[in-house]
Length: 441
Ligand code: NAD
Ligand code: G6P
Ligand code: MN
Image 1: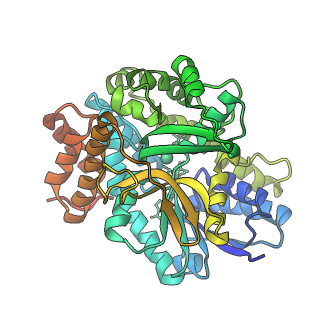
Image 2: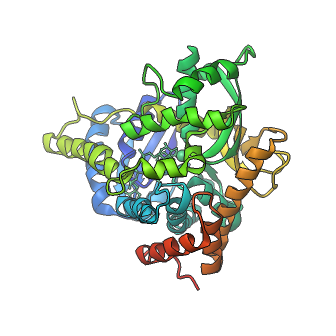
């Protein structure tokens, strides 16, 4: 079987060890000959790189492994680039979350003003790594899960329309695992219908391979418990704040009982509740810096000190195996059915063709083929149209370096109550992002 050469862009990510371990666990399904970590912060990446070097020597001595900050070294002779960069790192995520909260508005990584600020930073970083990939390995595919995926995907559509970049999110994967637990099924045996934007969508059907529909059964459960399950099956979303999010799906279902909601809709449908119930001085960025980031980097340092990863504390991120499924779909033309962020082109019949939407796709070696989801009801359509226009305005603002358009984007966001508040937030965000955003006129 062919063996693949892979670069992970954002090698210093808190998710890198879990994903490398997951890929090792799946090495029979997706054989690798080379794995390279690439990051533009060499110091941060070296901690994980050194530890993974020790681990891989012990567990996969035949796999050629290295880590580098040199794009040429990283991207030459690659079949796949797994991308999870965070432009501005946790220092900027904290600002994305805290600045809006100072104005009484949702402070979130990908939703509302925080997501817009992050989007304006991410576009530059994403274009940079796409260009490296195309310079050194023109046939390489990028499997991107860098956020905010909705804005990144729209930027790719506009600025790199022919690039082989696939944008994907793990939230529907995690939630489907919860649904499968609720109905006592294996997630592999379930097939869904879904429509929306990234972090903004609904399941309209959850069936097993025999065609039995579970929507009503899951809905009855979610109406009482949200997506909180007895057994933890979705390993990435476990902290207390995530449990609150799973629980809140109950209130999302109450307002729109027709379909099963993506948990991120809470930021648009209950922003006042979220602002009132969050600690404005200690946000998710602080939780992650004191939680996942500390744990992962401490585990790495321990492996380095001991010189061995035997009994080490890197864990397999098994939920991330959808990344291998996606790589396999491209590499082996498996025609796996997966939710992807793609250009609509009629998949949602009553929604603009040029909107980047999240829908089930059949993925083969030419990439994703979206499956038609038909017409959607007015409530969801109107919410989506407002949000997709925000995302488009952000990309236009980036391209045209337009203050006006970014102000409009913020004003249109359902999370912000007025043009005045939007402007106040924007001016604070510009100041905080001056090292990252294009200059706005
Ligand atoms: P992190 O800050 O720990 O890691 C990101 C790394 O990217 C850092 O080491 C940073 O130096 C590097 N980086 C930043 N700009 C870069 C550039 N231009 N070129 C190369 N490297 C660059 O962040 P994290 O919490 O591990 O998350 C990583 C990314 O994955 C984020 O974008 C996050 O939102 C995303 N994510 C997505 C999903 C999904 O389902 N789509 C799930 C989890 C995380
Ligand atoms: C989910 C989303 C990702 C997001 C992550 C944040 O997995 O799909 O897009 O990056 O949550 O998780 P965190 O633990 O960093 O808050
Ligand atoms: Mn996501």
